[in-house]
Structures are given as structure tokens and as C-alpha cells.
Length: 203
Image 1 (cartoon, rainbow, N blue to C red):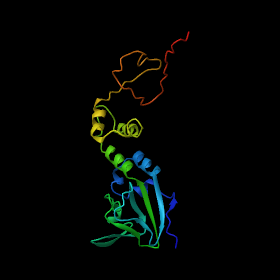
Image 2 (cartoon, rainbow, N blue to C red):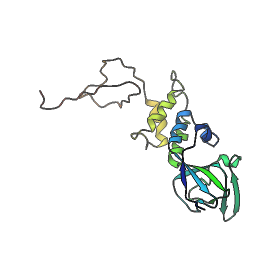
Image 3 (cartoon, one colour):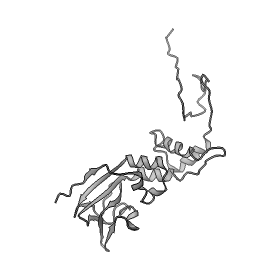
């Protein structure tokens, strides 16, 4: 029987909400995780990972059963069970060998670092400042996903948002001028801005 992992696209936010800590994520964070998740269809006896594996993935059992074997013994994890709500052998390096125990199983595979960041960012205080709405947290998470901020250590994330100030602007208003001191870092939260730069030598 072919045990090669095969991709599947049958997955929804509701399906992911069965799992811990995915059940704590907001809709936009969960959708982001969903878009970066691959569902694997595996046959009986297929090996999901071996002891000592360090691949940067987190696995959740969507359907079927998996045997987790270690030097201390083995146990079977079934989808829908309390233990099945948690990631499979999530410590790295892996301490278990995961093998499909049912005729067929569906496993959700997602980037480990991406998941950890989404969970950590989702725990940012809500609301961060007096006068701001709870929805502002979703915007902050969107900001942290951008290349400029994605590598920012979590220890610095809260400090960043503590110093952010909202600056409402009207159409035609000048925010900064060429040659001004670079005292601040500006982020366009909504709307559009036109950037004009003087080119030397032009008339």
C-alpha cells in the first residue's frame, strides 16, 4: 500500500479550532494559519516522523489514529480524543516515532515558528491603550507579519506597541518633508500616501 503523503485541501477554520492552542486564536490569525497549512493523507503504517526528527513542523491529527512509539513504550492517539486535541510529539528533537495505526489518516502540517508567533502575538494585551478598540490587535498582528517586523524578538514586540502613536491625517496634509530629521518611523495603517522626492539636476 502506498504510504506517500498526499496533499489535501479539505480544511476549515472550524476544523482547526478543535485543537490547542489554535482554539485561542482570532479569526484572522486562524485564517492565516489555515492558508499556510498542508493536509497530508497517509496510509496505514506510514511514518510521520522518527525519534530525533528536527523538522520545523507542528502536526495535528485530523482523522484516524497514530501510534507514538518511544523507548518507554507506545500509545495510540485517536482523532477526536482529548489527547488528539494537542500537537503530536511536538518537542524537538522528537521523542517519539509516529506511525499511522488506522487504515487511513489525515494530518495537518504547519510551520512551527509561524504557529508559535501567531499564538504569542494573539496574547498581546487588548486593548493596548486607552481609547483603542479590541479590533486594533488584529491590525497589530498584520503588521508583525510583514517582512520588516517578522523577525522582531517577542521581548521587543510589546515595547514597540507601547510607543506607537496614532496620527490622523487629512487629504493633502504633509506628514514629513524631504530633509526633515529622521526622528520617527511612520506606518500607514489605512489609506494611501503620495511620496515625492527631489531629483538632483532636474529643472
